[in-house]
Image (tube, rainbow, N blue to C red; front, side, top):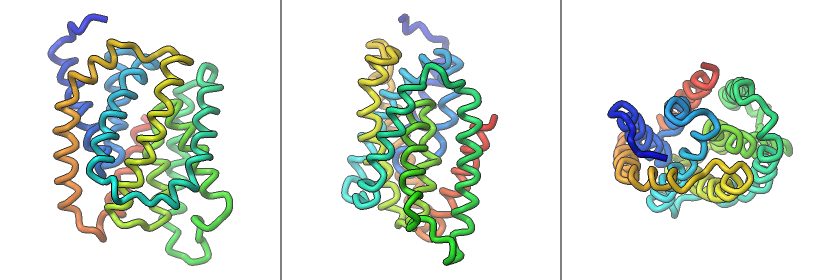
Length: 245
């Protein structure tokens, strides 16, 4: 591959890297804007091979800053189911229509948001239902393998746990670091859509990812603790709407 991108394409790549960096330090959902942007440059499925190394580099920034704040109890509950969903996504990745898949995911995210908004009623204590973690885990793993759109799904899972802001971000960072490292060999050797050139592009974009992470950290600090849940709900709703588009 030649790195002879146009100025517009380089601008899109740099802005995409910054948004990915922001998304990994507590500004969830903004990374969904990157998916169609990269697809315009590289094409649909090849763009996921460009995006995954970018996500991993940004995950490292997120874990480095929030590594002490992970809620391992909730992570352990979800990991086995998420890995199951991930391998399910690998299996049917070549036969599922990505267009309709994203439509289904967005509808499910909207339905999940509705459940969370109603969660204030004690009779609707979803996190303690036996099916909640398996459902969110399988859906999240499947979504991340098929289209890198698991952010809203995992946000719904953690919103249900009423975690403080720092634990919400730290738990998300660790979850996606593990999941994305697991996806890497699957996409490289099973789907064959991660190339050395894609990794080199991401290394060139590493400063932009770092700048995005820096800006995201300072943005999150300005959001009051009691307002962060509302902020995540709004961003997650907008993300689901973008998936519909």
